[in-house]
Image 1 (tube, rainbow, N blue to C red):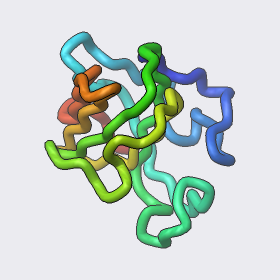
Image 2: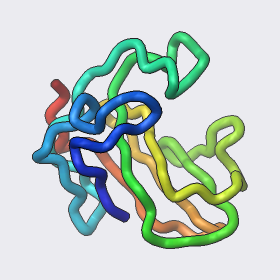
Image 3: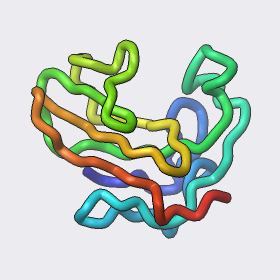
Image 4: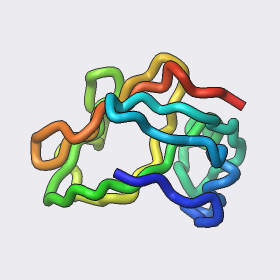
Length: 118
């Protein structure tokens, strides 16, 4: 997986408005660096309660046909056996873990224990 450069735009927001340029992911899936609080992210979701918060954008380098996103070990509604899409933005909070599975095989499990929440 790779992280986006700060100058790129994703769903109407610049990556630099979502995360700091110090963001990185360690081999064990630990995310370190700054994730910024965002409000009014209407292109992320049509649900009002999902338009504010902290967002973690990344791109998978592994390819496949289906994928599942599990938050804290559980696949959310509509997040299981989805069509594969390598460009992902997760809405995250302190204490969350997210596992990304491609074709029923885990690719990475992110944790956000060492993030600076700005």
